[in-house]
Length: 326
Image 1 (cartoon, rainbow, N blue to C red):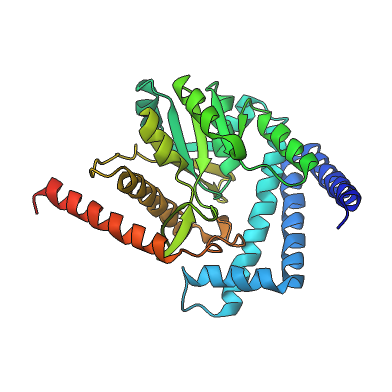
Image 2: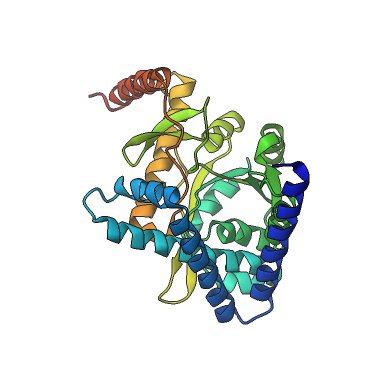
């Protein structure tokens, strides 16, 4: 498609999304959520028209529910669309909400884990996932006055990318673009800030393959790599929408212990696997709140990737036996 046509389509898409966003912002919160649900229903309709997306979304879910009939799995995909439509309505409200309004939406679990990490005075890495309302989980700490930088992939549509960054920035959250993140992450951690990074999307080739729902998946190792390099504590932080009281639970897990196996790559693998397991358990608790429509297992491991995993797992197992004396 000619570049001019891309430009026009980008502008049209941005204009439509901006109108929806403003409608969400300037109506009561319940109405905003209703609009979000409608956006989710529209997404579901689009997915049904684009049959391949439905097929691989159902295939993704079979990793969690191998015996469920396809009709039930499709209903979960529909619920996922609705959830993320509502999550976008909450994202739109970040730009215009006061810190008090945001804090009133959140129930913390494990806040003492954050306090312990923060007192270490080495910066903190939040290992997150596209689960629940992950944007609010990042933003609430900025609203509370902490320096927070979120590692985000640049959206192809530059107008939409700017809109998203403006919405996130409402509470004071700062953005680090994933494409040029390394030095920025190091600098911010050395400044003793919070850096958040999601690990649950397909990382492509030349990345570490770790088990996710029983199958090797290309995984970003940002939390483990930079936490170990700088000495910053790594905290898995996940959010759930609790429909019973219309609140968001922000669950802060204990600091992930970095175990010295004698092999740096194996250490990174072990930390990343522990985070993966925490994310998996959260998804099992609320499967409709995770991004099953994403092609998480799209990139397939090479024979070299499989051998690297097997070799480092032997190192990990040997190190664990030595630690326990078994």
